Structure formats: structure tokens, C-alpha cells
Length: 450
Image (cartoon, rainbow, N blue to C red):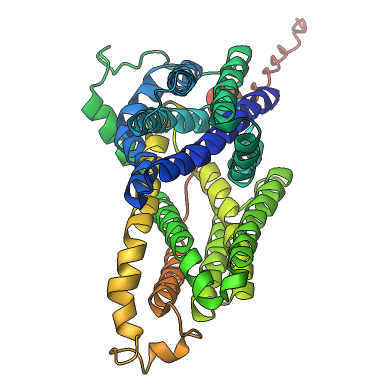
């Protein structure tokens, strides 16, 4: 666990630095261009390249040492941050350079997180894997919570240069922790060969990873559930501001948005810390189902009664369930997939789950305004039925979409609640050595009577 704590500290620093720079650079793009489209393009580039690079990243993570992959990815991201700092210092910083750096860091993340998730299997004991996954979630939650605040402080103290220096330093410290850490690698590294002594091709390795990702009904259910969960999270986040603004008088709108956002962050932090302190549940699947239904019910209630107070409580409850689903599902995948294949499996899983989040961000606005709003607006086909259930006269399309998203999450959690995940037997090294056989004493020989 000591090695994991060292690596975890480095991941926390790099995630915090990326959160600070991401917020500040997005703000810089909007202030410089005044274009929502260019601002949204930066957000899209933070997702899409990493998704496209995920299959390649998974194969490389399994072909080479996880520590080497992490070092190379961190070094590449640090060099991109250094290039951005150099451009800003010389006065030549442009929007396209920010886009290029975002693409590089997104691709590096496609290598970093699957390699880290696969390396945790060898760093900690099986009963500690849930705690390690929750600690990773805590690092991400802390970075999301503190990043915008620290970015605002650094922008006020030293401008964008201070932010970029902080980003470079965070990557450097992350690389340092990896240089100091030594963690075991799964058997078969650095090169994997088949029975004929040849390394399998990329297509064969990807096919094997895809088969292992969905090889059990329980794993297919987990993949579907986490993907839907991420999609609902993105949809709810995109609809949050319009709903709060529609239900709040103008003088109190900023405070209401801050209240709802803070409550969501607190729910994420409280649940992450609790999962990091407690041990992994003996039966993770019932916990996953309960947390999913709880979070989906919170989203459904928020859509029915989109008032600032209820939205704040719903945000807290929704994000309360997210770390439970994340850490428990991670434990199940680590137990059901062989260590030498976890890089491909975790990279493909990340591609699917991030795809759900990307679809949520892209479709939330069009679905709310062009599909849901005409249905429940006065004179619409559902205005006299579903429209009466929505306790709002403002953004009714967003409220209806939020209700549908919450109901989808609840149904997804309940449909596969009876599935099971079969764990692999532990490696031979983890078995206790067999007891040494006691030699059977020879029968006592006596002289035969004459």
C-alpha cells in the first residue's frame, strides 16, 4: 500500500494541475475570442482524442511495463505544458496552441488512467482494491473541487503564467513520484507471446480485450450501467444552469448556481472519503444497484421539482452514489480480468464510459430545446399529462429531459441487479505454500521367532 500511496500522491498533483490549467485556459479562450463555439471546441478536444486513442493505449499498456507507460505519458504531457508556457512567456500564445496542448494531454490521459488502474492490481492486496479505487476517485473529486478556486487565485496573483508554471511543476512532481516508486508488473512483460512464440497482432489483442470486457453478463451490465451513469451525469450538469436560472430571481442567480455546484462537489467528496476509509463491501453488486437507484431517483426528483433547494439536495445525493459505483465496479473488473489483459480492458471501458459522457454533453441541449420542450409546452401533446407533473413554468424541456434521464438510470440499475461476476482464481504465488508431507514411518522390524 505504501507504493500506491506514493503513486496516488503524484496522480493527485497532476490531476490538480490539469484542473487548474484547464479552467484557466478555457476562461482565456472565451475572454480572448468571445466565442462560445471555440470555448466548446476546447471542451470537446478534452474528450474525443483520448477516446480515439484508447484502443491503442490499451494494447501498449499490456505490452510494456505499466510504470514505463506512465512515465512516458507524464513526460509527454509535461513537455506540452512547457511548450505552452514558453509560448505565453514570449507573447506568442494562440488559441490553436491551447487546442494542440489539450489534444496531447487528452491522449496522454488515455494511457495514464488505464495503466494506473491496471497497476493497482499488483500494488495492493485484493481486500484493499476498493479503497485504492475510492482514493483515486477522491483525488479526481478534490481536483475538480479545488481546481477552479485555485485557478482564480493564481490568475489574480500572477496571471496565466502562474497557472502554466503550476501545471508544469505538477507534472514534474508526478514524474518524480513514478521514478521513486517500484511496483510489480504482471507476468509476461515486457513482451507477450502466443504458443508459437510469436507476439499476437494488434487486431488479435484488441479482440481479446473486447471479449474479456463483455465476457460475462455481469460485466456487460456493469459496462452498460457505468456508461449510462456518466451520460446522465453529463446531461444533468449541462441542464443544471438553465434550470437554476429559470427558477431563481435575477439578483440571486449567481448564489443559487454556486450553492447547487458546491452541494454536488460535497456529495462527491463525502462519498469518496467514506469509500476510501471503509473496506470493500463483500458483495459489491447490491451496493452498485442501490447507489444507482438512489442517484437516478435524485435526478428524477430534481426534474419534477426544479427548485434551487431541491436541486442542491439532488446534486448532493446524485454525486453521493457516483464513487460507490466507480470503486465497486472497479473491484469487480480487477477480480474478473487477468492482470496481463487489464490495460486493454480498462482502456476500452474508459472509451465507452467517456463516450456516454460526451453524448450527454452533446445531446442535452438539442434534446431539451427541440424534442422535450415542444412536448410539454402549452398546446403540446403531453402538456395536459406529463406537463402537469412538472412543477415549473420555466424551462420545461430541461425538466422533462432530467426526469427521463433519472428514470433511465433507475431502470438500468434494476434490470441487471441479479447478474453476478465470477472472479478469477488468485495466481499461484498468492496461494499459501502446501504443507510439507510428513514421511510415513517405516514399520518396526522385529526378529522373526525361529
